[in-house]
Image 1: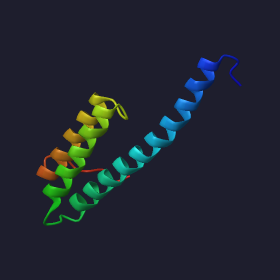
Image 2 (image 1 turned 60 degrees about the vertical axis):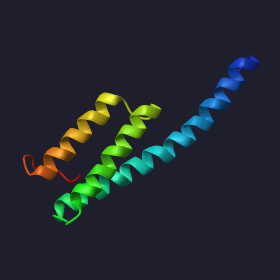
Image 3 (image 1 turned 90 degrees about the horizontal axis):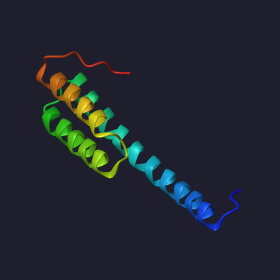
Length: 91
């Protein structure tokens, strides 16, 4: 346990942020999973679903949940897959 009051407060803040970020990451993973599924099934509205996932990636990068280069890389791969220029790996 932290001895200083400032360190104790920082620890409490980090726990709150960890819980909040976990929710954000879970939401982001859901959007990406939906986009990959739409691409795999060649859904009619796959472009719209991928655009939603891209917006969510941008939002998480802005909030600092993921790094902006990570968001950019994921968006690039999704957009290449939806255009048919790259095969999507469903993991």
